[in-house]
Amino acid sequence: SYLCYALARLVTGMGTGGLSVASYVWYAELIGKQSRSKLTITTCSGFAIGIVLLSPMSYMLPWWRALSLVIFILGMPVLVLTFQLQESPKWLATRERTDEMYKGLCYIASVNGHPAPPPPPPRPAVSLPVAGNQQAAGVDDASKKRSVLRILICDG
Image (cartoon, rainbow, N blue to C red; front, top):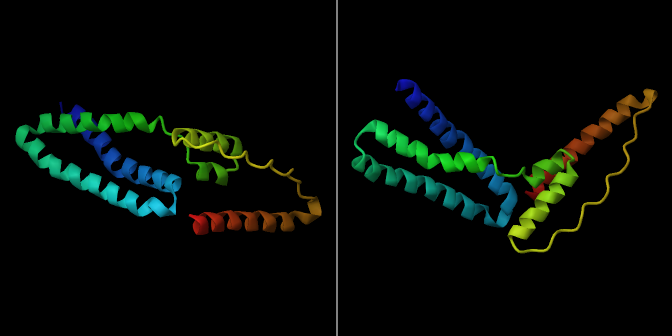
């Protein structure tokens, strides 16, 4: 039916446009600066190989409905596996969710066969601004956000 086709195309389009960009950024945060060029090459090569394989598939399946169904089915594992991914440790660090960040780093280390990293230092106690010093607290918060952003941009 047309409704089934439209829904399948919608999911396929979201996977092509949304998941590919999001997964690239997620992997880029995890692998570090040294391997980002390899990541770009493999990502672009995978996309190109998929386009090249589409021609023989369309020759073997000349009916557009069958071809659309096969493309949809081939993309479903990627969609299902997306829900198994963990949040990026860098993103968790910017949100000050250090416990989750540490668990994620330990999991990544165990998958890669490395020992667990040392635990993060305890967070300092947060002092609430005094009524007369509200402006200074806002300045400190702004400079803290800038320094976190500077660390993320410079350190990669």
